[in-house]
Image (cartoon, rainbow, N blue to C red; front, top):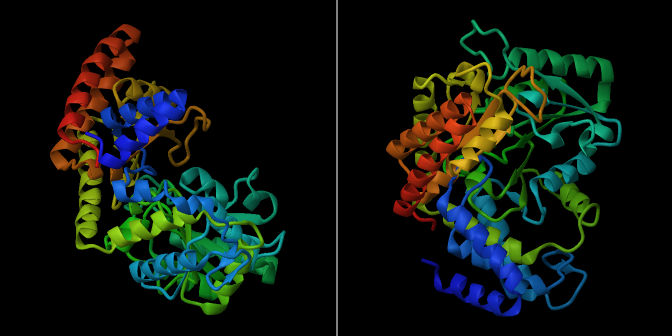
Length: 438
């Protein structure tokens, strides 16, 4: 059942723009009746969702609190300061910029704040779990700056197989320092498809040896960090960026954090007027609401369950013959190497087949994947959204069964797939009915 505000919005749209209302209804039904396993997605609370649809969208508030370029910003100043205070309290740091429109924008501003075009930075091999803003050739970070990449452990016999190779990372960074001198400026850690705990202290030791800045992009694990379920990048990292959705369960947007006042000032100037114009104050309001929710004790309980659910799903899939990269997960996500089940399984097919069953995920490369990005040998699964629905370990094991049944049927051919997808889709709907969205 819709909350009163959502119901009112539907009625307003149905009257003002029936075509848009119809599309909204379809998407609402899709979300309500499918199991969301995309690791970077979540279901926000009604308070966060409705904060985005307020009169704050009407106002230009270029600049920062106390230094706006437009009049009429007194309440926007109060709101942004509250969002900053809550962000600092949540992550136990001194300075926060809540204006980035996205995680990608937050990272772009970071490059502009601390590096010059052509400067060198280090990040994880992108195909092994890095983000496109960490040095992809067609991205600003790879076109205007010069990335060097550190690897995972590729030795399958090693107990650290497919985990970050910290010794190799140190060698890569020291070589970059020797070769490029003062043009080597930054080490990036924090990833979009890495299922293990990040050793921020070890990275700081490497950064100090090289005399460079350490940056953590915690877009995926921000909620877990805030809840104390994953170690914090502070006090080890000089600067931190993140998104505010994913595990933090806020609106789509970005965030910058630091303990260094001078670094904060440089970042503020880089974001505005360097990159962005007017901030999205209705989104900043929703960020403040989400930060407030994350400061409550129940968010810690939720985050703990996110990890338990991810581990339950990974364990159940392993029992069914799938291979989980690095042997498991410490956080909210896992990479499933489909070749463990069958050499004929392709990530793109798996994504499409599972959607027919009402299970939403994304194809994803696995470490040293021989297949191209549009195919991949794996899928990425995450537990945040399902945990928001109220799923526990038993439900995640049921989801593993849905995944196995669907993909096994797909390997048998179109007829078997269609028959099994119809059965699984009905069971998914029934499970979603028992665990409705917030």
